[in-house]
Amino acid sequence: MLRLLSIRNFVVVDSLELELDAGFTVLTGETGAGKSILLDALALLLGDRFEPGQLRMGAERAEIGAAFDVDGRHTVAEWLGTQGLPAEEGTLLVRRTLDRDGRSRAWINGRPVTLAQCREVGGRLVDLHGQHEHQSLVAADVQRDLVDAFGGFAALTRETGAAWRAWSDARERREAAEKAAAASGAERDRLEARRSDLAALRLGADEWESLARAQSRLAHAAALLEAASTGVDALADGDDALSRRLASVTARLDAQAAHDPALAEIVSLLEPARIQIDEAARALRRYGERLDLDPAELGRVEERLAAIHDAARRHRTRPEALRELLAATERELAALAESADVALLAQREAQAEAAYRAVAGELSAKRRYAASELASRVTESMQQLAMAGGRLEIAVEPLATPASYGLERCEFRVGTHPKQPVGPLARVASGGELSRIALAIQVVASGVGEVPTLVFDEVDAGIGGTVAAHVGRLLQTLGRERQVLCVTHLPQVAAFADHHYRVVKLGDAAGVRAGVEPLADSARVDELARMMAGAAITAKTRAHARELLELHRRAR
Image (cartoon, rainbow, N blue to C red; front, side, top):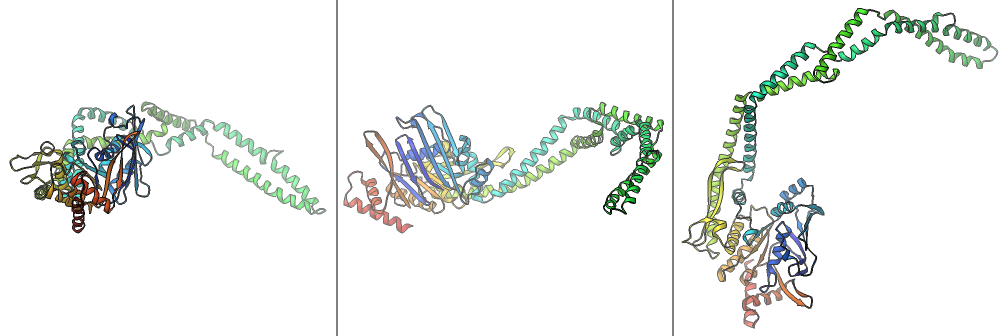
């Protein structure tokens, strides 16, 4: 819901802030005061094209901002989440600046955005009904969505879209397999050759690392044996071995410990060292006994290493990566075999198409019924909106090619009087008629609509009297479900509003500017009287205005 609209240096608006509430709000004022300028500013904020003439004379930059209450608006919250623009405390802030050179910048929640993003979020926040270029009702996808929302089968529509995408994916895989048949044959031969070569190698797990260690050991066996023998001599077997020398030192200190017990502690420190030296000497003897000086074994190991090296070079990888390359090759061959099975892919495509057509067929039946019911109710409402004998028809026509949204398209066709043949909404209806048709549709579908704020301009063009009162009553009814803003020049419409603002034109030495003032009860009576009689307000017209306002209150 729109909570605040702020405008600076836009057309005749110098500086203006308009606070809005829920329900039905009207904007009234004398011709030329700038009523529609407020709606133009809102449309500009939400992505409309900026014209240099919209900048206030003498100003360098125009600025428009708005605050929206988006609590409970899941579609808005989801969109903001995907864009990385979360709303804080349920409030969405939109701002746009426009300078004299035609440059435009926009922000949502303080972060720079594109005009396309402004339009996307605007479509989820506000529906403008006025001039043709502001209306979403003439768009084919909006008309279809209205039918689906009215019928209450949006979930079925999403299911249809998911089934269509699954069918499209299956079709693309089958087509790709057919086109790549020749290429896949060559690729399969290459992969088969690589798999055969790697499988013949029979490379075991960790075999490369084990062979490398064995080769290093065998190649240096003589040096290793010599080092072990020298170590045994130095530790235990030689005349000057460490174990003998340490034993001699320990014996002398132990003998003197009788004279000074402190030496006993030192002897106890040396004893473990002697034991460790003896253990090391025994370990070196065992190592030397096990050491293999077999040249034939070394030759075998080196031959195996060479074979692994050659395979790694052929396949341009590291020796330790050969086993993973074999596994990857087998996976590629399996995937290629599956993708090359055109018959299997065609079968899966047929299954996906059947699933899509089943759910889309169910959607078609529901869509035809909802379209008929919606058209009937809107036609009934049109009779009270200066379009007696007019009718709305919703054509549900099959598509040449199935689409993500189903097997048919929906087109709103209207005839605004009995002798006029029905035609597409955008071509047949005038601006005022289109607004009133939109009003009828919104009232009929008010329980299922998702856009929280509806804005109507020209809704009362070419009507008056009883029809105007009916329009006002419909807007009031719609205001119970959603926020409704309406620019009007008819007192019969304005009297039904929950909130009333008057747009005034002010003039001084600096030029002409527009202002907006909220109207309390007495001021509303005066404004309704002015709308009835112009400048010559009499006690009679004021009494009539008061009566109209009271009738409105009883209607509520």
